[in-house]
Image 1 (cartoon, rainbow, N blue to C red):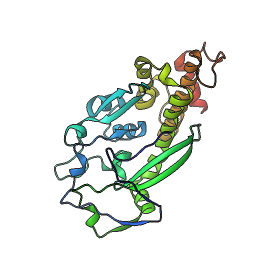
Image 2 (tube, helix red, strand yellow):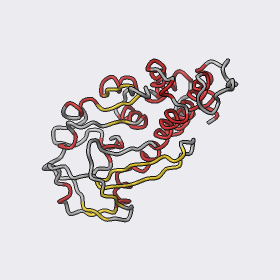
Image 3 (cartoon, rainbow, N blue to C red):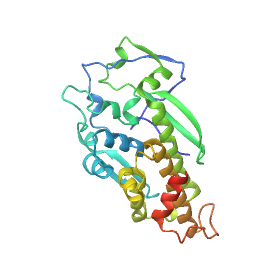
Length: 269
């Protein structure tokens, strides 16, 4: 199982349904207080959208705004915003507003609604069980005292979270496939995991290397297909260690250079 929530730390999970009604409206009196001293984990789509928005390469965005590490057991890479963890988020304006509000990451879009998912089948079209909940109210937050009411469905639509959820679920499915089906804990080293970083978090670099321009493939399609490429490459790697669905076989693409193999998967989808 892979789960994902839109907050960090302890939460009180009062489950809600899409049609449930709640009151919330951000207040200027507490604006920006929720954007400091908090760990905001980022998916590849979060990084890509933010980097494009401020016209930075994926590599530069990671270097300037993020910390990343590799899990001690799975060695899978994970990324989070560095300034917000230590103090104010780097994108926080003096008046408490967000300077990249249109491109803000998934974890910043949905408060006070949180989400947990269970991936029943981590296939290329993952089977998801979703649970929505109200996050425990932060002491400084005055949003719950606002006059505006929403249904949960309206809130998620207004925040643009639904597309982010969809693309995040594809990534979570990939992570679960790698850790459980391919048993990457047994063979994926940090050095090998670093090879995944361009595929996951540096799409501009990957496009240049593979000669696939934006005019030939839009951003979302490129995102979906490069996740498929990661899945294919890891499946073939795992087979050499006796893991995964190809264990005990010789993958048919072992003589094809890795760059060509990735390009083939991305172009053919």
